Image (cartoon, rainbow, N blue to C red):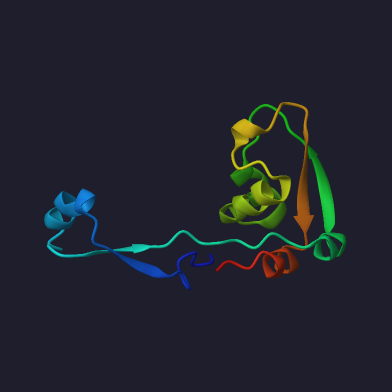
Amino acid sequence: MANRNLDRKIATNLSETYRQLRKSRGREYSLEQYRSPTINYPTSEEFQDLEYIRHTWKTGDRYFKLAHEYYGDSTYWWVIALFNKKPTENHVKMGSTVYIPQPLDRVLLYCSVQ
């Protein structure tokens, strides 16, 4: 399984809002947090270089289940969400077509995380 925090930037939080949290963790003056990653969206040329499996959304479908079925690893659920521009399952309507981009190694190359 990939370590999603491997190359993430770390920020020092000095905000007064988090003072009580810092104190409870023994970090009186600062708290380190992972920054939200930026995921590059593939270019139109990169899109054309991929293949897609069509999946009709049905009752019980979840991104993590589709990632497990098509990629063998449920932690890649975000790839399906990203490529369909539907951040959560609540954004997908019953009967909608969801596209599963393939092959995963190329997809991940095009979706570099910064």
